[in-house]
Image (cartoon, rainbow, N blue to C red; front, side, top):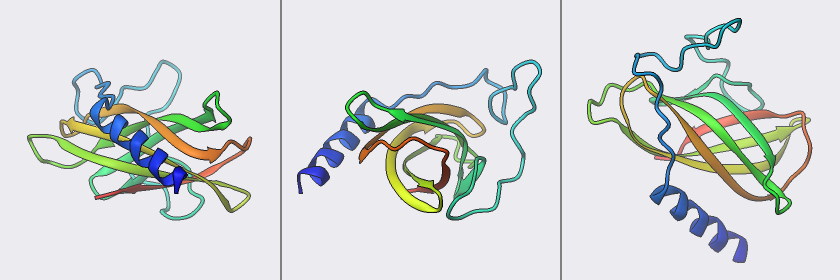
Length: 144
């Protein structure tokens, strides 16, 4: 019960202070750094144990980094693109499920608010699941 209350409290905090680190203003996401390739235009196969990019509805998980949050739990950051066409932007919460060796080891929550079409944001991720070192695969789901 305490774990659920803590997760809901952290999610509420995230929603009020969500990160909206937009890209350079060009549609289609963040331009690639020199010497790297752009993210794929189509999503990787969906479902348990995929690697980014992974799509869910009008949202695409482009990359994710998970780590120990300093308290022994999972934490991280994700680059997420709104692929919808609502001119007012997209707002949503997300769940990123982390798998290690095919086993579900963590559920991380993040959010994005009023993201214009084609823009990419950086979302902070929170979890109350105990950190386990990788390697990992992921599942990405928009929550509503």
